[in-house]
Amino acid sequence: MQYMLLIYRDEAAMGHASPAQMSEVMGAFMAYTTALRESGAFVAGDRLDFSGTATTVRVTDGKTQVLDGPYAETKEQLGGFYIIEAPDLDAALSWAGRCPGTRIGAVEVRPIPPMPGSAGAQAG
Image (tube, rainbow, N blue to C red; front, side):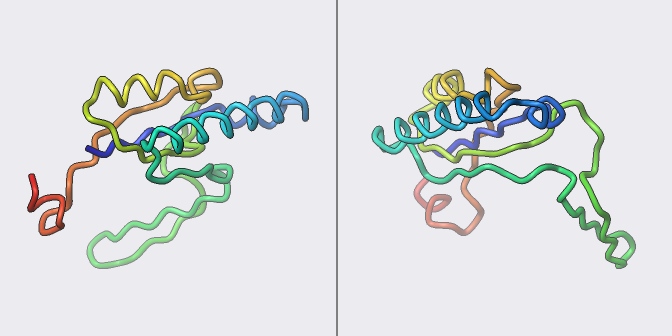
């Protein structure tokens, strides 16, 4: 089963981090990514640019609206993600607990159900 690990962090705090602190955080993420890859759990993952670079698209009554910035104002913003392969939720939670994102914010874990009509949906 695939799971998405959504990494949330406080962008303001990240903006005030020293180069040494940023280097330490990036090193921790690189080591974590290496561990995921070596275990065979890694499917995909990457960091995201700051939420101020986001564009939100909505369609209401057939009209497309394009808005700058994130949809909601929150203390923590989505800063990156991993998609992992794990046998069950407990294993996914174990990987999430080891993620460096838990030290700078929070990691949300969500199962990724197969899309209807996909090969994964047929097998289940």
